[in-house]
Image 1: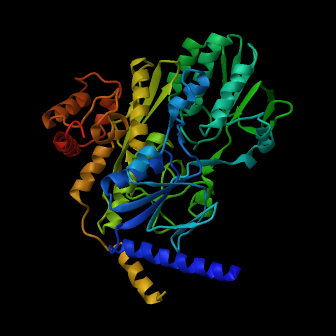
Image 2 (image 1 turned 60 degrees about the vertical axis):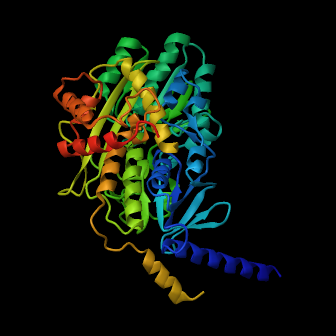
Image 3 (image 1 turned 180 degrees about the vertical axis):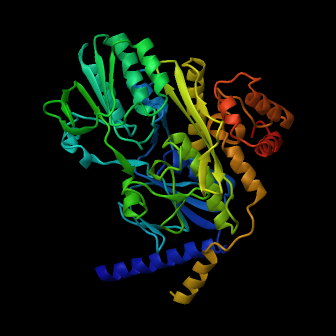
Length: 422
Length: 102
């Protein structure tokens, strides 16, 4: 009886597969099915733009979360200037555009059969797959990390959500005079200016609420990796004597019981330990065999974001091997997603992708509750080098921190979240 | 299931060695590079200048003034320099043809 049922199920599953293929060939309602793994800046934008530009294509978006929490602007939550609810969006706009949202974890990809396996069971077949999983952390690179994180003695807060709220709560709990310790991972990591914005945000909170508190920044990099002079000037002007910054200081171990971290030279104590481990592409990229470089990143053709190692599979965002001068940022992932969406539509319709894509980047960082500094760039396709290259003479940073860009930064967030979710 | 049928259908799905890229697709892809700040299709949800419906001559003039420094800016003087004249022309054509409101 049990066996009979299973066979029955297989028959139905087989018919379903055949149906989706028939749809792809133009005999059904849909021209083809695109499965998107990840509903962040890359995945949500890709889902939005494919449905907007070609409603004849079926889009299924898979994410383990039931809603979106933004990493950009999350430092303002940590600084106490915004509530986390202000940085969250629902998937309903995408549903209204006809995106089928599946709340599950993608656990495997069979690129030969073109099937994504879900944790709760069931497979999703696809004509083209878009993998936009963001980053995962290399916890094993920092001794003691997993255990200390389990007991909430250390947080990364480098994926916005519960850890963002936890870090804010820890900052509120410590006494005036307590030490906030942040450890910055070696580049490349998600959001190059992010750690320095976070230092600024914690300082803005301490300045008002805990003026005797100190910030100790241990950076695995030789120096501040983005907008260095602007951040250092803001720290000196606005928070004199509060921030101690050490470059070339890589944290190799965490002791949650002793509330200390160890670098190659020292053991250092803190009252809040915000240690951000080194990154690699999200786990599903590893399981799908998409990693091409240093066991960490996925190389793609930037004209389509198609994987260099898996046909019909595209990779977006922080998980990719960045082109020269290309940061791992939400803005960049959103831009890549539009290149990818256009290419996927072209390929499904039997056309060639755009031969010369363009992407831009802007990263705004709040150095206080209201003042911002930016870095911007424009990247054009270079056929000689077969990659996207920053345009010389374009892009740059703010001339000085200013409040006007503080308003633009918040408006940027509203517009890019709308560009992701409709 | 007839295996040969499946293979035939699967072959129909494979990307043909296609014709040239579609100009409309190239144009809307370029326009999409502005959307992060100025809103999807240039329809800003607030706090940024909308671009949908902007007359072509205005858009080209503004971009020229950003590039020359004649128009003060926080960031557009840096971004405008990243686009070619021909790309700005494409942006002008596209945005001017869009209604300001959907």
